[in-house]
Amino acid sequence: MPEGLAPTFGLYLLGRAPPTVAWEARWLKWADFGLPADRDDADDALRQAWHRLDSDRVEIACGGGRGRTGTALACLVLLDAGTALDAVEYVRQHYDAHAIETPWQRRYVTRFFR
Image (cartoon, rainbow, N blue to C red; front, side, top):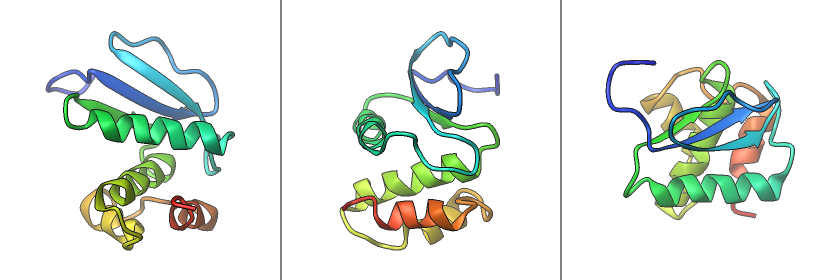
């Protein structure tokens, strides 16, 4: 566990169920280098995480912290901005230069509002 406050909500983007944590958590089935297994579930999970940002300490995580996490963060940027700005570039500038690792993850972000 890194130093600092523990999350109060976690969204875990993994190919298999994550270990149990001490805070409320949600698992979104999402294979490494891929896309969410269920687009509707992903939309609901990302919106749930976004709504909780005002009142909770939200953790979003995958195995490596770049591809799936970066893709999810870019979708949250779009939800927050309410517009189709270049969320991929925003996440790469403010989170990790290598975030959103595959062309299909980038396409997922650009089509998130559709």
